[in-house]
Amino acid sequence: MTHTAVTENKRLGDVLEFIRERQDQMRPPKVKTNSEKVGYKSRGTKPGPRTDFTNDPEVIARRQRASTRIEAAE
Image (cartoon, rainbow, N blue to C red; front, side, top):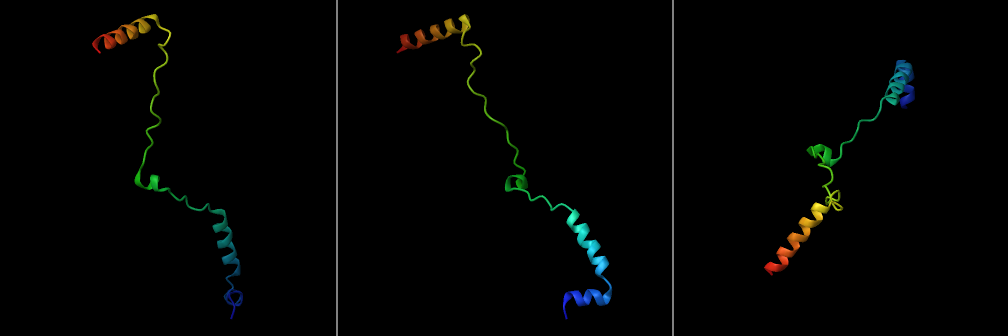
C-alpha cells in the first residue's frame, strides 16, 4: 500500500496539505556559528598610530629634544 492510498483512505489529504503549506511558510531555524555558540564578542580593531599632531610645532620640537637626548646618552 502506498502513502497516497493510506491518506486517501483516512481522508487526511486536506489536513496534510494544510500542514505542508504551514511548514513551507515557516523560515528554517538560524544555525549559530561556533563563535556565536561560545559567546564570542569582537572588540573591534586596535587604534593605529596617532597622526593628528604631526604638523604641530610643539610636538616636533619635543621629538627633536628627545632624539638629541637619546643620541647624547649613547
